[in-house]
Image (cartoon, rainbow, N blue to C red; front, side, top):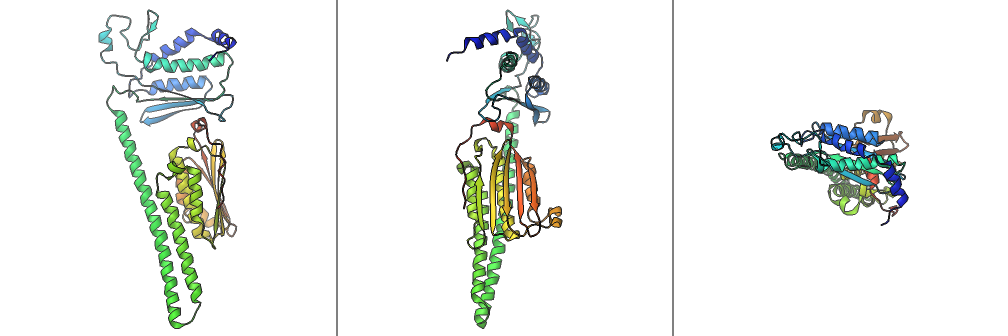
Length: 402
């Protein structure tokens, strides 16, 4: 690959070597031995802000130990793949360093002294030189009045080094335990929902068949209508069970994708002769959506559909999934009986409490548009983390109708 000589000349003329070396020395002079990365993380956040980066955040992965991220926007921000630049903020310990270099210029592990043209200090090579180089390169582009074609996403994380006690292993185990607890809680809730739905359906069927039996014995009443009603309840119970079982399968989204799984959910919700469900979707950047967000969207849709057909008696339920960067918008709309303002304020019935909880867990905004007798629209708007824009997504239009 050949580089335009004029571009090389432009960059060289804009390069400030002393500033770049000074950046590295400042980084080395900020101790960040594993477990004490906070000060260095703040220095990196300040540096990103000085570069004009957006969405610079420090988020603790453990108490007092933040990771750093920031987005330097390119010419086509959010519309194309981006360059992910990631590095670790922690260094290995300095035990024995001063004793080894006692009486020399290198005695202080954080002095960043220059000896024979080389910068010395803990973390000089691993990884502060790498971090300093990437940030100096970003500053060089700005000095040369050049904007990268795509976004630059920076992620600086702690706890990479293995020379310290196994905090990373400990945190991994805690995360695994938390995930397992969440899965169990979710499945227990689903099991209760399935039990309630099936118990309600079978009770209704039993009652209808009991009435039919009495009418048959007495040779009076509308026997056919009772049997038809029992059949309708059975179909409803089957649809409820299918919806809940689909949500129980933890791998279903991983296997088929969010859009396809939502389509199946909608298909399973149809009950011929009672109500119809349809589904429409934009091109969704599924590969970039965090798994927990996809899971919560599926469960939210399942709950919204279930609530509509249980309580609103609709003939049509429409589910749409729209991508309006940086937001993903899920809408479940029905033409049923609607919800009164009093019930809506209580947020108790109709599963509203669960939906609000799910929305808050993914930083979503829940908007409910309804009125008694005029149907209901439940709209969930979820902001997708800016890193999501860095992953190319499918150009296939996923639109279907059941």
